[in-house]
Image 1 (cartoon, rainbow, N blue to C red):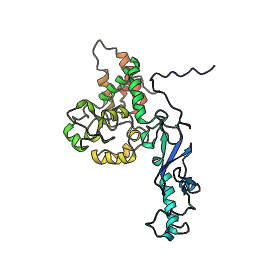
Image 2: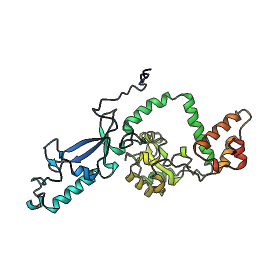
Image 3: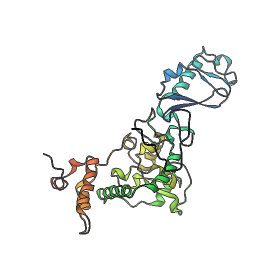
Image 4: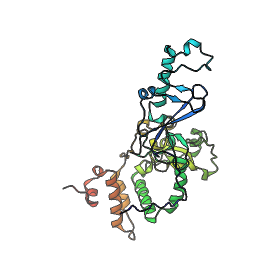
Length: 328
């Protein structure tokens, strides 16, 4: 049977980018004319040694960048003999040139299949097993626009499930949340969105947000070491993403320095559920219901969260029995 045609519900269509949406790109600035060049390297990242064996021709001036090239004559500030390929100066130059252009995934670029721009790797959110960079097909800016439409179309059941998870998370961290000193937060971040650098006005409350750096979705409380100042747009893009999915490594280092957050935890590639919580007390709070509330639904809801987050071992015998998680 043929596959059902996908229906676009957003009114935002993808463009033909002339390549796979998962391809990786290298960017370099021509050493002769300074023009920026992009190279599509496809589905496998290059090693510095592989790059050294290639010839990169500038699209503007035609200068060849290779391990066998002299440095350009336009470099008059270098003595002529130091620009010759036989010299150690030139050999070391090309080694560093190709190494810095390829040595880690963060230097690669990617083409958005919604706006068609080639952008740095950090402009795309993480998506495991999607291409060599493991990033989404659309940039964060386009993803934010798409989500602005789709979030309005989420079903009542999807909204309810999200609300339930947040409510249960609040029960688990009750007593650990702190009242955020907004004036101090603005001082820490110099009254600017940490992600975009956009100036923010503390009096315009709808234009900025206090972000959980480590998301409440993964049971982290809000306190001054877990609070970041973001613009409304940046906060919409981040949502419940794990820090390393949204922030670049350099931004994570800065964020840890500003807030005192644990950099090792922030930089984890996969989300880590907070286990420094009183799971049993959280279960008891969630099941302490009024007579009009459907208790059986509450049991099902909290049990699902316990199982999804692998918190069974933290339950005492009573709550394990109540939730039907007794072992044989």
